[in-house]
Image (tube, rainbow over the protein chains, first blue to last red):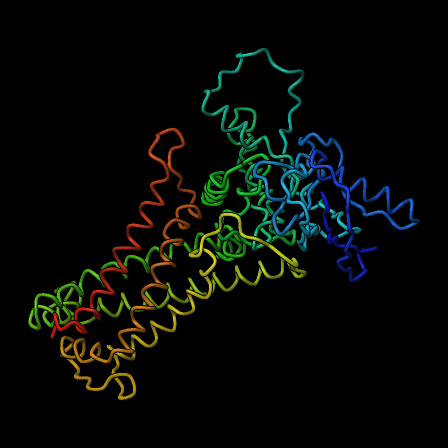
Amino acid sequence: MHLTLKIWRQSSPEDAGQLVTYEMPDVSEHMSFLEMLDVLNERLTEQGEDPVSFDHDCREGICGMCGLMINGSAHGPRAATTTCQLHMREFEDGETILIEPWRAEAFPVVKDLVVDRSSFDRIIQVGGYVSVNTGSAPDANALPIGKEVANRAMDAAACIGCGACVAQCPNGAAQLFTSAKIAHLALLPQGQPERQRRTQRMVEQMEQEAFGSCSNFRECEAVCPKEIDVGFIAMMNREYLRAKLS
Amino acid sequence: MSWIVEFYRSSIGRKVVMAVSGLALFGFVLIHMVGNLKVYLGPEAFNHYAEGLRTIGDPLFGYGQLLWIARIGLLLAVVVHIHAAWKTTQVSRAARPAGYQLRRSVQQTYAERTMRWGGVIVLLFILYHLAHFTFGPDWAHPDFVPGDPYHNFVVGFQVWWVSAFYIVAQLCLGLHLKHGLWSLFQSLGITPDQDSGHGDWRRTFATSFALVIVLGNISFPLAVLAGVVQ
């Protein structure tokens, strides 16, 4: 298939940046989106040009490194799919594809399509863990946890921290990420001792980073590759209220 | 007091304030609509109801006192609601100074996209509505008679473009409520039981009440224009 790519090129954080058009006359529909960019980069390298920088690691949809704004939606048109798991058969022959980096004050562009997501790391650093050393994995069923609770905790723990929620949010808010990270610990016994302190600290760190404010527009859950739902945001609000009022 | 300021500074706290003030305003809008249905019972019933609002709380409260307390409370709710919305917008604008060339909505609805401007239209409507039926200056009402709300109601809505503006404003209010009445539960952390199998009752609540209020309020200018209320 023949595709026209319009890619955001920005040589450094200070550079103003611009869209650059590339023609791709021979894309296989079986390629993943990142493989298609690999082909472009190989060609650019051969021509002595600077290849397009983009983040990627596992390429099997579990690491959270990749993430591009494709035709105006985070991770592209397919639901519950990371950019690396998106295949070119989702696009039409002759289509023009617009590729931009995540846009948020808290995710500054490093180069081209690479953004700095360490604001997420800092939210985790203030409380997204259990402080005590719990040793090796406990025996199965030694600690009884209801099936519904376990399911819900697992739903939240599926977050890979890719940042699509922030990228897609009209407000640039990080509520879905933060709530998932709070919820998966708040639901389990191991997370109880630090439950309120964790919620307060993580919410406060989220506020300090330059994220926006949630308006319950639900765009985040629509693009989340792990289908984390906004029910967790309500849960975080409840947890935060409880921590503040007690 | 300092914890309230700190709470309001957080985006979660601000949304809680928006939810609570919104709930109060919704309560008012609902009672206002239901009360105005008395217009269908004729001039005496309607004027009696309007006068009755001033004697609620008697003998604990004097004439019109409780009404004024309610008015002050509503004004406070409006101010707080708007400030929280304005602040939320500011914070969110700052969170994405460099925009996208293209950003498509995936599941954001029309009601959600129009919360901000729809809210502004509702505010302008409220100001006009107060001039139209409460203060009654010459530019706002052709023949305002203090103490005769039924007459003011009928004469006021006989101007077709005024009625048209009321209807448009009510549609804006309906959209605002459709998102707001769902969103407030979300902001307060009230969620349906995941496993109850009853779905999201908050959606049903929001859509039903938005519809009830819009239909009730729109019926008033339409009834006057159709000659049902005269």
